[in-house]
Image (tube, rainbow, N blue to C red; front, side):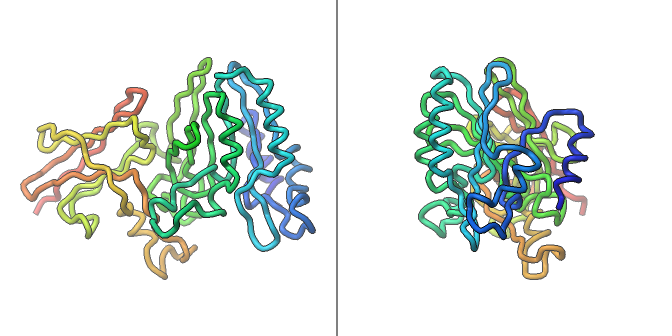
Length: 315
Protein backbone atom coordinates (compact mmCIF):
# COMPACT_ATOMS: atom_id res chain seq x y z
CA UNK A 1 0.00 0.00 0.00
CA UNK A 2 2.96 2.34 0.55
CA UNK A 3 4.60 1.78 -2.84
CA UNK A 4 2.71 4.51 -4.77
CA UNK A 5 3.60 7.14 -2.16
CA UNK A 6 7.22 5.94 -2.15
CA UNK A 7 7.32 6.19 -5.94
CA UNK A 8 5.97 9.75 -5.81
CA UNK A 9 8.57 10.66 -3.20
CA UNK A 10 11.64 9.38 -5.00
CA UNK A 11 10.45 10.82 -8.32
CA UNK A 12 10.69 14.29 -6.79
CA UNK A 13 14.43 13.79 -6.20
CA UNK A 14 15.20 13.60 -9.91
CA UNK A 15 17.69 10.74 -9.44
CA UNK A 16 17.61 7.13 -10.57
CA UNK A 17 16.63 4.74 -7.77
CA UNK A 18 17.54 1.04 -7.76
CA UNK A 19 15.34 -1.02 -5.45
CA UNK A 20 16.40 -3.84 -3.11
CA UNK A 21 13.78 -6.18 -1.63
CA UNK A 22 13.43 -5.92 2.15
CA UNK A 23 11.55 -8.02 4.67
CA UNK A 24 8.67 -5.50 4.69
CA UNK A 25 8.31 -5.73 0.89
CA UNK A 26 6.87 -9.26 0.79
CA UNK A 27 3.40 -10.63 0.10
CA UNK A 28 2.98 -12.66 3.29
CA UNK A 29 -0.24 -14.28 2.04
CA UNK A 30 1.43 -15.77 -1.05
CA UNK A 31 1.09 -19.55 -1.29
CA UNK A 32 4.82 -20.11 -1.88
CA UNK A 33 8.10 -18.32 -1.22
CA UNK A 34 8.65 -17.78 -4.93
CA UNK A 35 5.52 -15.58 -5.10
CA UNK A 36 6.20 -13.32 -2.12
CA UNK A 37 7.78 -10.63 -4.31
CA UNK A 38 4.95 -10.44 -6.87
CA UNK A 39 3.77 -6.98 -5.81
CA UNK A 40 7.34 -5.68 -5.64
CA UNK A 41 8.00 -6.92 -9.18
CA UNK A 42 4.86 -5.30 -10.56
CA UNK A 43 6.09 -1.93 -9.30
CA UNK A 44 9.86 -2.14 -9.69
CA UNK A 45 10.86 -5.01 -11.94
CA UNK A 46 13.21 -7.90 -11.13
CA UNK A 47 14.30 -8.65 -7.58
CA UNK A 48 17.93 -9.34 -8.56
CA UNK A 49 19.87 -7.74 -11.39
CA UNK A 50 23.15 -5.97 -12.23
CA UNK A 51 24.27 -2.84 -14.02
CA UNK A 52 27.43 -0.85 -14.73
CA UNK A 53 28.03 2.80 -13.92
CA UNK A 54 31.45 3.98 -14.99
CA UNK A 55 34.14 1.50 -13.99
CA UNK A 56 32.11 -0.22 -11.26
CA UNK A 57 29.86 -3.27 -11.62
CA UNK A 58 26.83 -3.17 -9.32
CA UNK A 59 24.80 -6.20 -8.27
CA UNK A 60 21.46 -6.26 -6.44
CA UNK A 61 20.54 -9.51 -4.67
CA UNK A 62 17.26 -10.68 -3.13
CA UNK A 63 18.22 -12.36 0.15
CA UNK A 64 14.96 -12.31 2.15
CA UNK A 65 13.39 -15.78 2.09
CA UNK A 66 9.91 -15.98 3.63
CA UNK A 67 8.97 -19.53 4.68
CA UNK A 68 5.39 -19.09 5.87
CA UNK A 69 5.92 -18.17 9.53
CA UNK A 70 8.89 -15.84 9.19
CA UNK A 71 11.93 -15.08 7.09
CA UNK A 72 15.63 -15.92 6.94
CA UNK A 73 18.58 -14.53 5.03
CA UNK A 74 19.09 -16.82 2.04
CA UNK A 75 20.07 -16.64 -1.64
CA UNK A 76 18.34 -19.37 -3.64
CA UNK A 77 20.01 -21.64 -6.17
CA UNK A 78 18.46 -20.00 -9.23
CA UNK A 79 19.88 -16.66 -8.12
CA UNK A 80 23.28 -18.19 -7.35
CA UNK A 81 23.44 -19.61 -10.87
CA UNK A 82 22.59 -16.19 -12.27
CA UNK A 83 25.25 -14.55 -10.06
CA UNK A 84 27.88 -17.01 -11.22
CA UNK A 85 27.06 -16.30 -14.88
CA UNK A 86 26.98 -12.54 -14.27
CA UNK A 87 30.37 -12.47 -12.55
CA UNK A 88 31.90 -14.63 -15.30
CA UNK A 89 31.56 -11.54 -17.54
CA UNK A 90 33.35 -9.26 -15.06
CA UNK A 91 37.13 -9.03 -15.30
CA UNK A 92 39.00 -10.47 -12.28
CA UNK A 93 40.10 -7.73 -9.91
CA UNK A 94 37.43 -5.28 -11.01
CA UNK A 95 35.53 -3.23 -8.41
CA UNK A 96 32.14 -4.76 -7.61
CA UNK A 97 29.49 -3.35 -5.27
CA UNK A 98 26.75 -5.67 -4.04
CA UNK A 99 23.50 -4.48 -2.48
CA UNK A 100 21.44 -6.71 -0.19
CA UNK A 101 18.85 -6.03 2.48
CA UNK A 102 19.82 -8.62 5.09
CA UNK A 103 23.59 -8.48 5.73
CA UNK A 104 25.73 -11.34 4.52
CA UNK A 105 26.84 -11.41 8.14
CA UNK A 106 25.78 -9.21 11.03
CA UNK A 107 28.12 -9.38 14.02
CA UNK A 108 25.32 -8.94 16.56
CA UNK A 109 25.88 -12.52 17.73
CA UNK A 110 29.57 -11.91 18.47
CA UNK A 111 28.83 -8.77 20.50
CA UNK A 112 25.94 -10.25 22.46
CA UNK A 113 27.83 -13.51 23.14
CA UNK A 114 24.49 -15.30 23.46
CA UNK A 115 24.83 -17.39 20.29
CA UNK A 116 27.64 -19.37 18.69
CA UNK A 117 26.81 -18.19 15.18
CA UNK A 118 24.93 -15.50 13.29
CA UNK A 119 21.15 -15.44 13.67
CA UNK A 120 19.40 -16.78 10.55
CA UNK A 121 17.12 -13.72 10.40
CA UNK A 122 19.92 -11.11 10.35
CA UNK A 123 22.56 -12.85 8.20
CA UNK A 124 22.59 -14.84 4.96
CA UNK A 125 22.73 -18.50 5.90
CA UNK A 126 24.45 -19.67 2.70
CA UNK A 127 26.78 -16.67 2.49
CA UNK A 128 29.82 -18.91 1.99
CA UNK A 129 28.61 -19.59 -1.56
CA UNK A 130 28.27 -15.86 -2.21
CA UNK A 131 31.71 -15.12 -0.77
CA UNK A 132 33.24 -17.81 -3.00
CA UNK A 133 31.75 -16.29 -6.16
CA UNK A 134 32.94 -12.79 -5.23
CA UNK A 135 36.48 -13.88 -4.39
CA UNK A 136 38.05 -12.82 -7.72
CA UNK A 137 36.98 -9.18 -7.34
CA UNK A 138 37.40 -6.11 -5.11
CA UNK A 139 34.06 -6.11 -3.35
CA UNK A 140 32.05 -3.82 -1.11
CA UNK A 141 28.68 -5.07 0.13
CA UNK A 142 26.09 -2.51 1.24
CA UNK A 143 23.26 -3.83 3.43
CA UNK A 144 20.86 -2.72 6.14
CA UNK A 145 18.07 -4.47 8.08
CA UNK A 146 19.59 -4.45 11.58
CA UNK A 147 18.95 -0.75 12.43
CA UNK A 148 22.56 -0.18 13.44
CA UNK A 149 25.84 0.75 11.79
CA UNK A 150 28.85 -1.54 11.46
CA UNK A 151 31.64 -2.57 9.12
CA UNK A 152 32.19 -6.30 8.68
CA UNK A 153 35.25 -7.85 7.05
CA UNK A 154 34.49 -11.48 6.21
CA UNK A 155 34.87 -13.71 3.18
CA UNK A 156 37.28 -11.30 1.53
CA UNK A 157 34.69 -8.50 1.28
CA UNK A 158 34.08 -5.24 3.13
CA UNK A 159 30.44 -5.09 4.19
CA UNK A 160 28.86 -1.78 5.16
CA UNK A 161 25.82 -2.48 7.34
CA UNK A 162 24.05 0.87 7.23
CA UNK A 163 22.08 2.62 9.91
CA UNK A 164 18.53 3.46 8.92
CA UNK A 165 16.53 6.53 7.98
CA UNK A 166 13.92 5.38 10.52
CA UNK A 167 16.48 4.94 13.32
CA UNK A 168 15.09 2.59 15.97
CA UNK A 169 11.83 1.99 14.09
CA UNK A 170 10.61 5.63 14.03
CA UNK A 171 10.92 6.05 17.80
CA UNK A 172 13.39 8.95 17.89
CA UNK A 173 16.58 10.45 16.46
CA UNK A 174 18.92 7.43 16.73
CA UNK A 175 19.26 3.75 15.95
CA UNK A 176 19.49 1.36 18.88
CA UNK A 177 23.31 1.46 18.80
CA UNK A 178 23.36 5.28 19.03
CA UNK A 179 23.96 5.87 15.31
CA UNK A 180 21.91 8.87 14.14
CA UNK A 181 18.92 8.07 11.97
CA UNK A 182 20.32 8.60 8.49
CA UNK A 183 21.89 7.10 5.40
CA UNK A 184 25.16 6.44 3.60
CA UNK A 185 26.67 8.61 0.88
CA UNK A 186 29.10 6.86 -1.50
CA UNK A 187 31.25 8.86 -3.90
CA UNK A 188 32.81 6.92 -6.76
CA UNK A 189 35.67 8.09 -8.96
CA UNK A 190 36.92 5.43 -11.31
CA UNK A 191 37.14 2.35 -9.11
CA UNK A 192 37.84 4.35 -5.95
CA UNK A 193 34.97 4.61 -3.45
CA UNK A 194 34.78 7.05 -0.55
CA UNK A 195 31.91 7.00 1.92
CA UNK A 196 30.30 9.04 4.67
CA UNK A 197 27.41 8.34 7.03
CA UNK A 198 24.97 11.26 7.01
CA UNK A 199 22.73 11.80 10.02
CA UNK A 200 19.39 13.22 8.92
CA UNK A 201 19.29 16.93 9.70
CA UNK A 202 22.94 16.87 10.80
CA UNK A 203 25.98 18.43 9.06
CA UNK A 204 28.35 16.08 7.25
CA UNK A 205 31.00 16.54 9.95
CA UNK A 206 28.68 15.13 12.64
CA UNK A 207 30.49 11.80 12.95
CA UNK A 208 30.73 11.19 16.70
CA UNK A 209 28.99 11.91 19.99
CA UNK A 210 30.77 12.35 23.35
CA UNK A 211 29.41 11.50 26.81
CA UNK A 212 30.95 12.64 30.06
CA UNK A 213 32.08 10.46 32.99
CA UNK A 214 29.16 8.82 34.74
CA UNK A 215 27.20 8.21 31.53
CA UNK A 216 27.90 4.47 31.80
CA UNK A 217 27.50 3.01 35.33
CA UNK A 218 29.96 0.25 34.43
CA UNK A 219 32.62 2.83 33.45
CA UNK A 220 31.83 5.57 35.94
CA UNK A 221 35.07 7.55 35.65
CA UNK A 222 35.44 7.24 31.89
CA UNK A 223 34.49 9.51 29.05
CA UNK A 224 32.79 7.76 26.11
CA UNK A 225 32.76 8.57 22.39
CA UNK A 226 30.44 6.83 19.95
CA UNK A 227 32.11 6.89 16.50
CA UNK A 228 29.37 5.17 14.55
CA UNK A 229 31.06 4.81 11.15
CA UNK A 230 34.34 3.56 12.63
CA UNK A 231 36.31 0.83 10.93
CA UNK A 232 39.82 -0.47 11.77
CA UNK A 233 41.49 2.20 9.61
CA UNK A 234 40.16 5.03 11.81
CA UNK A 235 42.09 6.55 14.72
CA UNK A 236 40.29 7.98 17.77
CA UNK A 237 42.32 10.17 20.14
CA UNK A 238 41.56 12.49 23.03
CA UNK A 239 42.94 15.80 24.27
CA UNK A 240 42.35 16.67 27.94
CA UNK A 241 42.68 20.32 29.02
CA UNK A 242 44.87 21.01 25.98
CA UNK A 243 47.19 18.00 26.48
CA UNK A 244 47.18 15.20 23.89
CA UNK A 245 46.52 11.90 25.66
CA UNK A 246 46.76 9.47 22.75
CA UNK A 247 44.33 6.80 21.50
CA UNK A 248 41.10 5.99 23.28
CA UNK A 249 40.31 2.36 24.10
CA UNK A 250 37.64 0.68 21.98
CA UNK A 251 35.23 -1.57 23.88
CA UNK A 252 31.84 -3.12 23.39
CA UNK A 253 29.06 -1.43 25.30
CA UNK A 254 25.71 0.36 25.21
CA UNK A 255 25.37 3.88 23.85
CA UNK A 256 24.23 6.04 26.82
CA UNK A 257 21.66 7.98 24.78
CA UNK A 258 20.16 4.74 23.51
CA UNK A 259 19.91 3.51 27.11
CA UNK A 260 18.17 6.73 28.08
CA UNK A 261 15.69 6.59 25.20
CA UNK A 262 15.08 2.86 24.80
CA UNK A 263 15.88 0.79 27.91
CA UNK A 264 13.02 -0.69 29.89
CA UNK A 265 9.58 -2.19 29.36
CA UNK A 266 7.95 1.25 29.07
CA UNK A 267 10.42 2.81 26.62
CA UNK A 268 10.25 3.97 23.93
CA UNK A 269 6.55 4.71 24.15
CA UNK A 270 5.78 4.02 20.48
CA UNK A 271 7.70 0.71 20.30
CA UNK A 272 8.25 -0.57 23.83
CA UNK A 273 10.03 -3.69 22.51
CA UNK A 274 12.97 -1.59 21.19
CA UNK A 275 16.01 -1.97 23.46
CA UNK A 276 19.62 -0.70 23.30
CA UNK A 277 21.99 -3.05 21.48
CA UNK A 278 25.62 -3.65 22.27
CA UNK A 279 27.92 -1.95 19.81
CA UNK A 280 31.66 -2.17 19.16
CA UNK A 281 32.17 1.43 18.00
CA UNK A 282 32.42 2.96 21.50
CA UNK A 283 35.70 4.48 22.75
CA UNK A 284 36.65 5.09 26.40
CA UNK A 285 39.13 7.34 28.20
CA UNK A 286 39.78 7.86 31.96
CA UNK A 287 38.73 11.49 32.54
CA UNK A 288 39.61 12.11 36.20
CA UNK A 289 37.83 14.53 38.53
CA UNK A 290 40.34 17.29 37.74
CA UNK A 291 39.68 17.13 33.98
CA UNK A 292 37.70 20.16 32.87
CA UNK A 293 37.53 19.89 29.08
CA UNK A 294 38.08 17.11 26.54
CA UNK A 295 38.20 17.12 22.77
CA UNK A 296 37.83 13.80 20.94
CA UNK A 297 39.45 13.71 17.50
CA UNK A 298 38.45 10.93 15.09
CA UNK A 299 40.27 10.54 11.75
CA UNK A 300 38.82 8.22 9.11
CA UNK A 301 40.59 6.06 6.53
CA UNK A 302 40.40 8.92 4.01
CA UNK A 303 42.29 11.36 6.26
CA UNK A 304 39.24 13.40 7.25
CA UNK A 305 39.24 14.52 10.89
CA UNK A 306 36.10 15.08 12.97
CA UNK A 307 35.92 16.46 16.49
CA UNK A 308 33.50 16.67 19.40
CA UNK A 309 33.96 18.29 22.82
CA UNK A 310 32.91 17.68 26.41
CA UNK A 311 33.13 20.24 29.21
CA UNK A 312 32.59 19.49 32.87
CA UNK A 313 29.46 21.31 34.10
CA UNK A 314 30.07 24.18 36.50
CA UNK A 315 29.45 23.35 40.14
